[in-house]
Structures are given as structure tokens and as C-alpha cells.
Image (cartoon, rainbow, N blue to C red; front, side):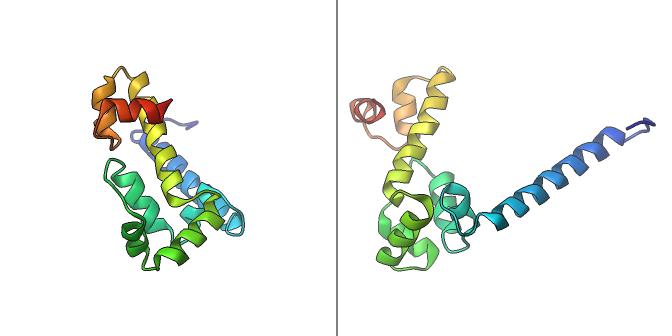
Length: 131
């Protein structure tokens, strides 16, 4: 960066990205025994369920579908998820949907479009849940 050359900015961005990934890896390695979203993300058994919820938040997920994605029984999945995240899978999904909804509403989207984007079949059901 001190001696600007062609491609220097790109190289600096790549180095910064690599350093971020390494820092996150180190952080995840340190939170394996704690709870929270990062601890669940670090858990190789729970990671597929989080990917499902985050990838398709509007889908009508069932506990059985999430457990199937992890290769665990519903009971084992629900217990492990709660132990790592601190809330049930369905509660986590509801909070995730509301976080998405808040962002979409702040971006100026209509209530009805946000409702369908986060998995609610009616505007009134979404409004009640959002309150």
C-alpha cells in the first residue's frame, strides 16, 4: 500500500478478507462450549438447520424437517439447539423472520410484501406477530 502498483487495492482487499475469515475461525474455535448463534454455527450438527432457516426463512419449517437436515431425531435436535442457542428452533426462526421483516420495512417495503417474504400468509397475522 505504501508503493501503489497496479492491482494493489485488490490484493489489499483479498488480504483483509482472508484475515477476517481467519479471525472468525479463531473466534468460533473459542466459543464451542458457549451458547448463542455463533456457537450453533460452529456446531457441525446444527449448522445445516441454521442454513435451512437462513436460506429459506419464508418456508413453513417444521421441527421434523429441521431435525432431518441435521440427521438427528427431533428430540435430540431440539435439545441440542436449545442448549447451544438458548432458545427453541421455532423461537429462533420466529426471531430471525422478525429481524428480516424489520430490515425490509425500514427499506420501504409494504407490509403485505414483507409478510409474504417472511412466511406469513396474511398481513394481519404478520402484524400481530411483529408487534
